[in-house]
Length: 169
View (cartoon, rainbow, N blue to C red):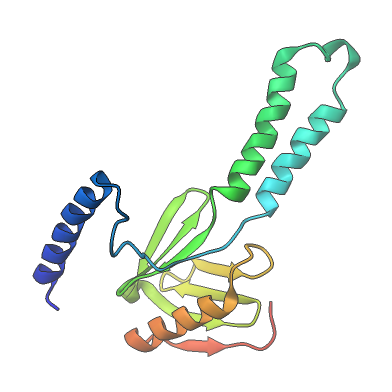
């Protein structure tokens, strides 16, 4: 399909989805293929900081509302990061997109030097030689079978070197 045709389809799909949402129907074609994980390290650190503040509160400050609000906000931020701000890997036709703490990063097929897949961790090495993005079963609770399948198909479609590892680093 030509790029012009794809833009026309996207434009018409967007317009159709707007009218479907107005009529209370679910949008069509919005499956973006994002494979979601769940970050637990940063929320754990936030919750620990909030609980640390709560248990080390001085007795003379126990009635101070700002101190209590600070503790509650740390705990709410931990809950937000755990349930709402989930890491993901989106595999599109020509690019890989993932969420980092600083925002969304995209690497086109031409920017990727190699892909390594494993049982507990997969990684994408970019051609700049410095950037390596890892998708881990332990750290971000990704479903590694779906990640590995998507990365394998992406590597095969774009002739990117694919390495399979049995040991995890």
